[in-house]
Image: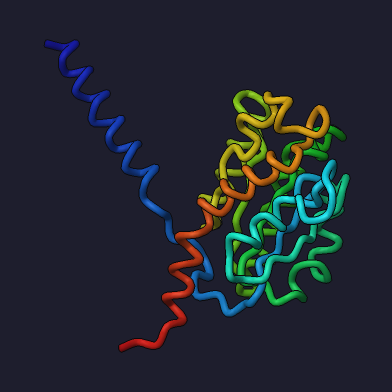
Length: 214
């Protein structure tokens, strides 16, 4: 009898988790008045390893009717990004900012608490400017798992979109990479598709919020 109760409890817990994963959370600035999507990140945003037009922001732009700006800089850490957030993001009429940082922090052994503080500060500065934020997780399986947990917590607490595991299936597939870490054109296209899938419901809701009431 006790075992049956345990299975029933596990079953209903699984259903709750599944439903929670399907429900889109409320995020800040869903009524954003900005005009551009800003992809703000490091080499994965910049498009290291591929030619012009093969980076993920370029692929994302082809999926949307909104201007997409690539504000990625190769080698950028979250600390360096904070120094340029004004000129590269806040002054460019952001509707939605896609934040992708953490890889270089990890490589340079920046303490995780510093990375977390920097990303949270960026999220809040962007939201204060009236734009939506999407936080991109570059983990894949156990690779950078700690960052996935920390970044998802920031997104949840600060009401930002969370884009999980964009490198999953890429980091372990040589046919999707240009070197040991960076994707090739096909890899960046897959990243764009994953980001597009995560942000689309919110862009659609934002567009509806601008439509005149009947």
